[in-house]
Amino acid sequence: MVGGVSEPLTDTQQASWRAFIESSWALHTRLEDELRAATGLSMADYHVMVVLSEAPAHRLRMGELAGRLVFSPSRLTYQISSMVKRGLVRKQACPDDGRGQEAVLTQHGLAELVAAAPLHLKTVRDSFIDHLDDDELAVIGRVFAKIRKA
Amino acid sequence: MVGGVSEPLTDTQQASWRAFIESSWALHTRLEDELRAATGLSMADYHVMVVLSEAPAHRLRMGELAGRLVFSPSRLTYQISSMVKRGLVRKQACPDDGRGQEAVLTQHGLAELVAAAPLHLKTVRDSFIDHLDDDELAVIGRVFAKIRKA
Image 1: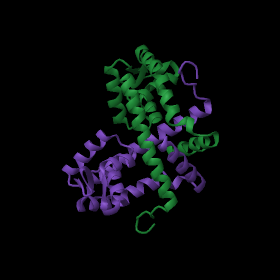
Image 2 (image 1 turned 45 degrees about the vertical axis):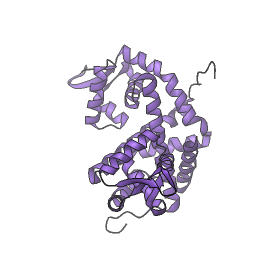
Image 3 (image 1 turned 45 degrees about the horizontal axis):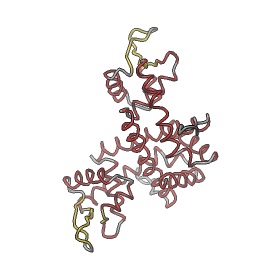
Image 4 (image 1 turned 180 degrees about the vertical axis):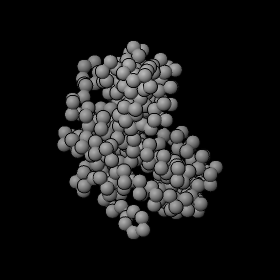
């Protein structure tokens, strides 16, 4: 580091970075395209519904949901408004704090998630999971948990 | 596999997949947001320019560029049209085959790439590379090269 300029990547770093960024970008595009074509849902819709479906009573405070999804507050507000219009979630005041708002997965949203899951799982297996051995999966899990915290 | 239905993920597969998909999604968003805010370029613009800058005479056939970027032909056509309007690339007939078309990085495109690279490198280091050791980088490189081919 000289004068705030980052050191160039080594050849190995460069090769790993390019493999990761180009391949993960193509993978995101494929997941999004296949999910949308089959169900009309975006990956953002799907992830919101997965996270809510795992929460107690299928509901989470907006701030907590934003944190789980690594979404900015404004991006989450936009995303949830779009899902409210489609009946997938609803917003309501937090029971223990009248000022806060929660996002709640609706019955319709849960049904859409359950219907979409098998197709999405097939894409996830075909495009990613089934190509990796246990050691590779363990490294991927550890690395991306670390990156996420950073 | 029964009747075409994919087997559910094991807990370990599920944990690794979720760490990867959520974290890489947040990373793509950060890279895109920081690049756009500082330079007005999208990640797609940037990747097209990097790939062209590395090609002989800064030019590639459209089909080959699509393959390198893992873009569909229609997505690449749209992307290149947008870049032509901004003067970053131009299209011209292949010298050895009048029917084919090449994308060529312009002087302006090269200058924009050179200006954007240090900022992008800093984000890549801060958000990814500097958190990984050599072994992790090697696994990431190997895994995503494999995924890309799949």
